[in-house]
Length: 180
Ligand SMILES: [Fe+2]
Image (cartoon, rainbow, N blue to C red):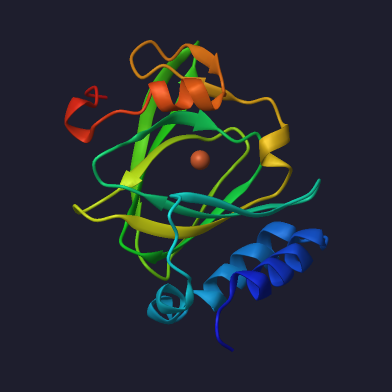
């Protein structure tokens, strides 16, 4: 079946509504992204980097493009996040909060066709890897724009309210990232 945002939203909503949502959403992403080039060519070109495709109390579905010259600041989601990449490579810099300090725990670069999940307590910073934009479908198991969640200062790890103003202010060029 040819990929479309509409059919993906319908399938992701059904997957997220079931009793084994994580398993179902991951398996849907793997299935849809089995041919990532087909998804990439079926997705309409978009002016905005991040597009909200659907949100209700159960699930939030986004198409997210990350540019290679900017790193999105460390943030939490407060719900399970499932990421399936179809273009480029999405670099996830993963942190753990320890006594109010942000500790870098791993960096995971997700390639086309791969699915990566982050739990409700996970904190990540994210960017396009390899000098090119990345593009992915992101499925969150809850109402992402309606929960109170945090951003974390790159250096001190201090929590700051997630607002678009703070998010934009804390974006970082990759060559200015602190050493973790
Ligand atoms: Fe995120």
